[in-house]
Image (cartoon, rainbow, N blue to C red; front, top):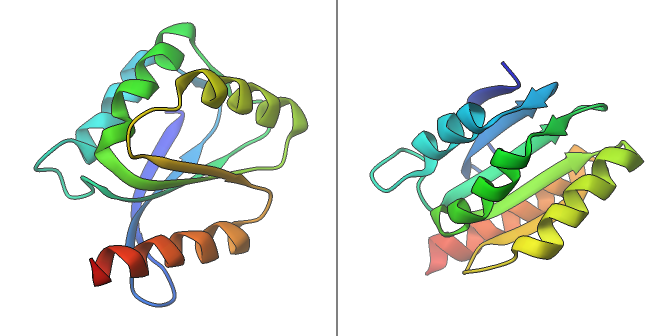
Amino acid sequence: MPFVFSDATTPSGNPYLRIETSGHVTLADGHAFAALIAPGAPHHRGLVLSQVAKGTEYSPDVRRYFPTLNEHFAALAVVVTSPIVRAAINLMLRFTRSGDAVLRMFTSEREALAWLESHGQARRSA
């Protein structure tokens, strides 16, 4: 499966959904992600970190579907080191920005977690 989901916690105690992403991501994979962030689900309006492996591809169907999920998470940090995968994700993001969702790409997990920490602190004080 292209998505491997796990529950994780930042160093300061903020819970987040961790996604290890690889291979060919399909619409069915998008639906699996949606089930974890839908209203009433454990990670609804929560923090998400996606670690994207080199060579990961996204089907056209899932690229169209992902923007419909933006309102279901508070912040999504995407860690990607492959320039080709990064360019593909940038293109997806450019055409799909909407709602309150905050998305940002990083080249290191350390930077991504620090950014998620700041959003977790803001959520706790709100």
